[in-house]
Amino acid sequence: QVQLVETGGGLVQAGGSLRLSCAPSGSALGINVMGWYRQAPGVERELVANIFRGGSTNYADSVKGRFTISRDTSKNTVYLQMNSLKPEDTAVYYCKAVLFGKAYWGQGTQVTVSS
Image (cartoon, rainbow, N blue to C red; front, side):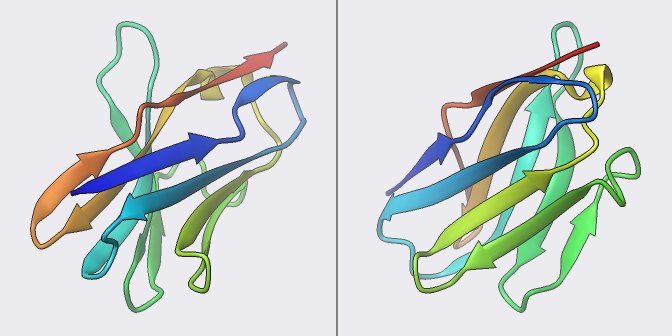
């Protein structure tokens, strides 16, 4: 069983930055991929970025060049650095981990970008 603890959400003005963190507790061995998703009201949850065990990453087109996903393997923590934030980035951001083919989700953290 894996629990994911997210921190770092909040309110920021357009053009500002935030960094989200996601740390798994419990057994984290065997996690193949971790990523960030987001869900705005009335919209389906969408992928923001993934980072795979080997270090490769992928991003949604809407965040390329603005967001960076990274990890600290010593802390087993994944980060999402969000720069040049836009009001349309406002959403609840969820961390996801895939362990032995099973997906685990964090509780979500609110990111609000004011214009």
